[in-house]
Length: 269
Image (cartoon, rainbow, N blue to C red; front, side, top):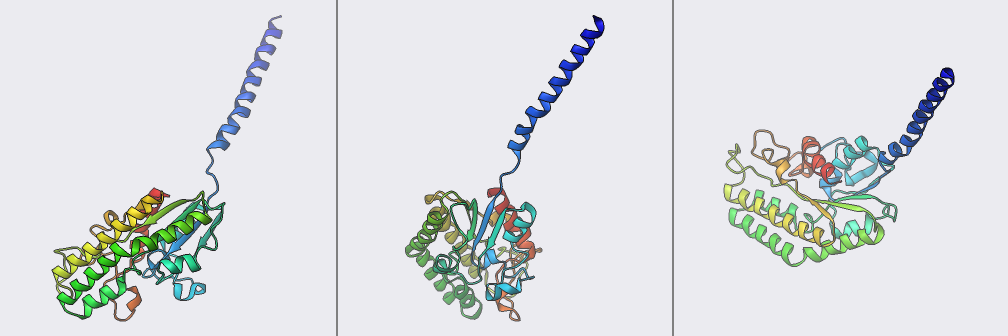
């Protein structure tokens, strides 16, 4: 009789253990990360101009293996990854040339766009080559464009993304301030010019953030991440003007992509 009770008790305990294991399996499976289909859109700040190690197949788009989309994909192993960001892209270039990989199954999208529409490159060249007054006038023209024209262009891009990828989480990333004011630069632009350029970056970011929010998208500011790493700081993550490789000028270095853009994208993805 006692042996029978022992056998019965042992069987009950074994059955309970088996049920616990079987019951735990669905819970563990439920916590596994869902597969992610990720598409990276945008301009040179997303393609990785300035970071080096470019994919030769990307040609003039200069997509870098050190750009934040590639770094995120390498560490997160999405089920699919399409990298269509391209150097020099404006809003109409994104809608015309970059949205092909988007579809109803796309889960995650990143994008930087708007700086080229606002004439960023021309602003910087004006400030480098011409007088302080010409620089500030050109900055003000760019800000006027951001106020009057850019919102509609951003709406076109954001609306097109939603139409093609209705379920995607869209992360819109902004632009850094370029200069540490009162920093270590002894030559080059005046402090007034640097202040005006930083103000224009803030102005652009405010407009981009507003349009992103109105479309239900997440805006990630990279200004805090780059603080202390601007041009004229002791550890810059941005190229200053580079006459031997002019395209790198005022773009993030590899450290700016990995230390600036990547953490911001990661925290919002």
